[in-house]
Length: 573
Ligand code: ATP
Ligand code: MG
Image (cartoon, rainbow, N blue to C red; front, side):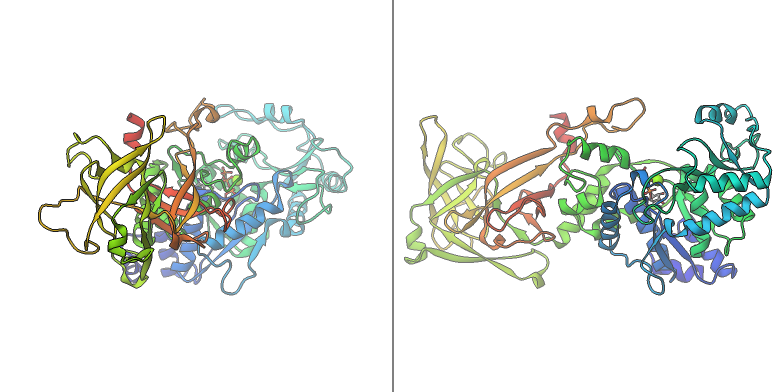
């Protein structure tokens, strides 16, 4: 079994895959069931992508299933908007929810009746009590890491009294905070999670799924493992900070008449440098308008990355690259950028777009064109993938090149400046070799037009001996092109660890994380480009249509990522 599975993949099994392999081999399980359990209190981020790839990936690999379960036990922070976005993001990541036999989506809130019954069961067993200590008192009674806690004065209430009090809690006869239901475990336990943890608290709030049916809500600890048991989860995988909760997870499973015995495993959460991945902080960025929305292309959310132009395949590849371990470490965001660049290099069709247009007029164009307005030249959509076809580019008398691709400074060596220089030659990508003859300037001395001549019959062939173009530059027809806006993004945070101890992450924001460039000129084949389609703009980077601001009349392109990893150079400039 072990070998067979290993041979399907070219990497060794991670520790969870090893556990599952053993559980299947020993017959402990015949089928595995995992779950991805987000709380619908924000949009999913890149850290969640790791958990999605892990849980859905295990189900796929071992022929089991993975449930999407909304861990919706705290109505105060939850919202239908988040539920919808989470569903969309999980499916976009490429994983079908709940296949093949289960309903699509589960909600922890649909277990509220069962959880309430189990809370009553614990009271009946003398293992839970209603406690009226105030939060401050409860903290004091809890003790510290080095000192044991003390028993609550309410700990020895009778079963009857506890049943009656808990019922009053349920009926709304107490105010929020007046009392809680606690498990009776051990106030002297070394693990603080076992010092009579809270099972139920009063929250007089409507719930997005259960409406006003409940005014008491179970805690995460009381809901999670039992939800796993109800759904028949075999391997309940969570992040390392829950390792200390595992004894409590097991206490509930052992002390309740649950239908199955799931087991909890922990892995290291993804942390990325230059990035914040806490829903609370991401929400603050949105609420306080540091970014546009949860799906702002600078956000590390799955929806932001999608809008930025990342493909699901690139995110899956990244998750595969970082692997799954039990020890925490910070991943370089350059790795994520590598994953998307690699994916786009392979898959994105090429196109030309001039970001800072400078007009160029070709004086002898008519001779080459035989009197026609344009010469149609073609270019492959992808240099290594002929199956992606060709694109047609109208080559016209007036074209645009990028302002940075021309200089009058004839002292610049061929090696230093491989672009157009006064009096010298350059090749226009896919079209002729041209020579810069003269320039026209405005009253401020800015160049407004470069007059050129083309070397006849050099489309697709080399010029005669003696003419050596300095390089190849991109261009766009000035008469047949698409006016567009381009948005260049930089990292949202300038600090490597915006989230690290004591820092105010808002002070680490990069004030130059967004640059909007108007008046860009894209080749005509980009008319009608749609969101979700990535392009490589030659020499500029990878771009995609912005799904929020783009219109057919005025396309807006987001730069997903540059062609080269130039972050290091940029910060040291
Ligand atoms: P946050 O701290 O961002 O609010 P969370 O853990 O509270 O995250 P949940 O909605 O509870 O968010 O998470 C759903 C699942 O995703 C959990 O199983 C959790 O362990 C996992 N998860 C969350 N953040 C990360 C991360 N950075 N890396 C890996 N897995 C994560
Ligand atoms: Mg959480």
